Length: 218
Image (cartoon, rainbow, N blue to C red; front, side, top):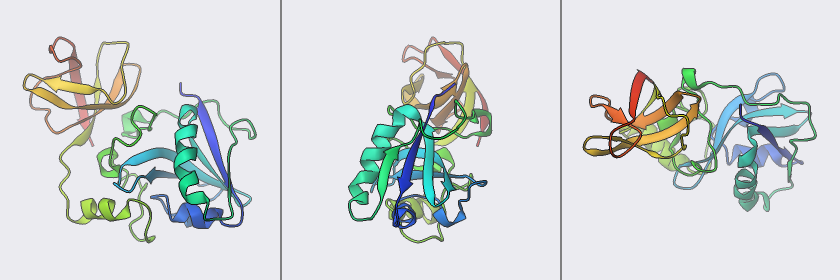
């Protein structure tokens, strides 16, 4: 189970700041209706991925707790221009003790070792309603929109299983010709992997001795 954290964004400009930074539409968020979203860098790659919810005008970004420092640092670059306060609220609110596991449904999380590595389309965020292309501009929007309307996605997300107990998010996976993709996320023996080639056998190691069983493509 992953220990969760809460990044709290409060102040009169909280909605304005987040609407200009996040991939999701902040206006759709309510206390009872969280929204999957991401904060991306100017190159369109995901810095942090979270569930966003609103409580009495304050916004909370729920994510793995060890992602809070990275998420705070990234948002603070823009927060200086707004009347907002960013705080670690992990110990302030009554929240579940761990993030839900959605790997079987193709929903991943971002961790320090994978921050800045993946595009939203590579993690299927548009299909999961984690990107709103009608809301207006947000950081990374130009590149993300170009992929949506003009691009061709090279790598696709798959679920898989393996026997190895120790795994590393963001590490390479292999086939006999070399690198075939990356591990995105895992819980136990269930993995989410990003690859463009499942016709050949896949492995966790370059020597091709630790096989991966691909189960489903999203």
